[in-house]
Image (cartoon, rainbow, N blue to C red):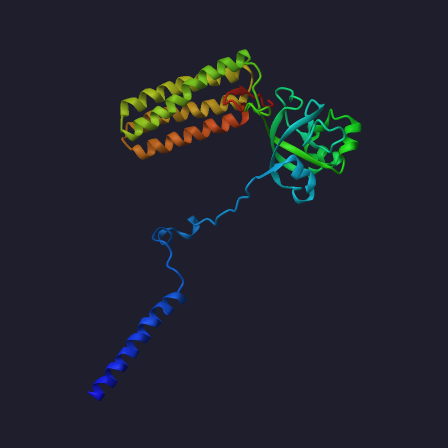
Amino acid sequence: MRDGVTIGRGAAAVLTLVVVSLPALRAQQPPAAPAATQAAPAAQQKPAVPTKPLLPLSVSTLLAHPDRFYGETVTVTGPVDQSLSPLAFSLDPDPTRAGAESVLVLAPRLNAPVALNGYVTVLGTLVKFDPVQVAKTAADRIADLPQGVAAAYTGRAALLATQIITSDFVELTRKLPPPMSVDDQLLTSIMKKVQPAVGAIRQAADKADMAAVRQQAGLLEQSFDEVEKFFDKQDRKDGAQFAADARLQAAALARIVATGKWDEVKTATGTLQQKCGACHAVYRERFDDGSYRLKMASK
């Protein structure tokens, strides 16, 4: 029995060692990567890009410690103290108190004047105002700023605004389009036929609907022919060439679909959209309301 007890205690000691050692060994090993990460090629594993959160500030906090926030993107809500130029105004924590310090706000555009004593929310980058430095990157913002105002705010806190929103949620800095010209109306009427046709081709390709692809490809050929003639009349050779290339690509779609190779149909549709995008980059300007206007490049 004594030997049996000795053997039992030895076995228990061994078991204890094993039980203690296994977790210790596991703790020393690096954790296994998730299955999806193990299967993904190294080229597809992109490092996480850290993003800085916006800093919500009151005007008084910003004025108390401006050095902490220079160069940072901040959002500030406060009352408008003065209108200083068509694109500049000041925010004051207490606009009723004469002589109170204020923050200069420089806007890229203002679709309507700011209301004095009205509250606005400004999103932008806080800088220590230097008219010479601002002029290098945003001269239009201070073109109408009186010299006395520029001198008074030099070395003080200023916001290079990207968005200015009123208390009733009107964004004053939206890039709004000018009225449509006759050319804008004509080109827009053609473009309104192109986008639905491209979308219809993609849906038809998913359903292997040969007749629908042919029909929409024909509509695209006709539309791009109209665009080509539009640019020809204006002697815009590169615009006419963009349209001609797109027209030929639409014709190619009708031929490819006859082979029943639907992957090639989808690839050809993507190529067509790239040609549209190349033309848009030169000749179409998108505004913040989602509309487009004709942008004339040099001949």
